[in-house]
Length: 224
Image (cartoon, rainbow, N blue to C red; front, side, top):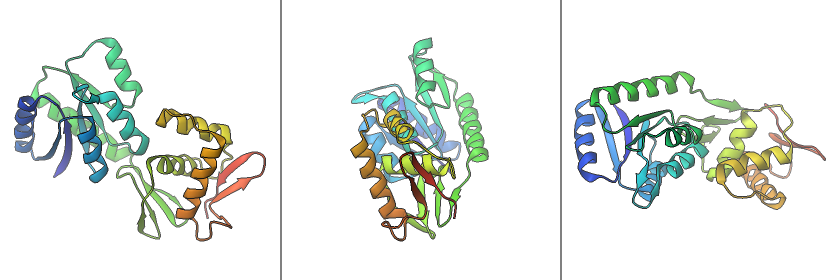
């Protein structure tokens, strides 16, 4: 049974959608706002996220950006704001689809299934020696044991492992982290994250074998 996180602050609409989707063999978790959605997402893996744009304590753009920082779980916006600017903004923060209200329930189910199928075809575990990232689940394992990384530690490791054996400059790493966190990443901050990441993935953080420093140039993830 596929799992869905429904983020919708209109409780009447949410109840109708939950009832309908449950009848279509989906398991639905409801979050009524931005903070509820982020808590639910951090506690459980979902096959798809249905996301309203206007929320009582924030907006769907912020939720989508937070999800995209750590996962490629399909995100479908459901919103009455169907103007071009909102649609473009939704896709720019990483949405997979955008459906205006009111919508046809059967079409919604078809789009959910399409997004999940597309995601399952494109998802694959990224391996680097003893370390593996499963982007679909947003998990990292070492020797099969799950590691617990912060959102930025996960993003940093994902950058390294999707560019294995390539030299990555400090400026590029800082820029990529800044783009997902919306906060300036200084040299000292980057040093801290590199150090924390090595402490979690390396057998001997003082003698790293995976994240190698290329003196004066940057770093390289070595596929052992």
